Amino acid sequence: MAITSEIEFRPAHVDAGPGGELAQAMREEIAEIYDGLELDGPSMPRAGAEELSPPGGGFIVGWRDREPVCCGGVKYLSDGTCEIKKMYVVPKARGQGVARTLLHELERTAMGLGYVVARLDTGPKQVHAQALYRSEGYEAIEDFNGNPVAVFWGEKRLRE
Image (tube, rainbow, N blue to C red; front, top):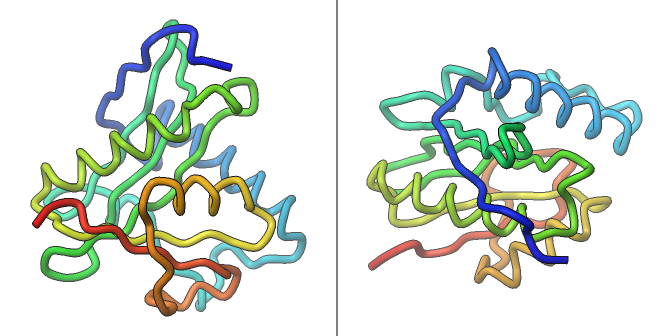
């Protein structure tokens, strides 16, 4: 199914407003998918307001027809390298190309912050996410963030 209307991306906060609501919905879904996962456990990679805010990070919300439909963030890892975090699309907007559009916007956000390489990860029960990342040129790499749930770690060069 094609996207029925354009998505407008706006900077947002991961811990407040529509961004916070979407990030919380993502947390709830992850907790349901991976029953028993300690989301705030010491081994989980961090991606809160501190990590997903300027100067090294960012967080965006995508709006369609005046409703927030997706969110995601960019987190500093090292000089020139970032991690894409908290990608989430509301259930009613799935299967319409929203996640791909969101990923492209997060890559643009990363480039705007000066990053040349983006990394990401996903778990074993998120096969659609892994397929999306691979189709967008993310090559499998070794575990870079110690995420105990992830089974795929990917990297993509955003520019030379």
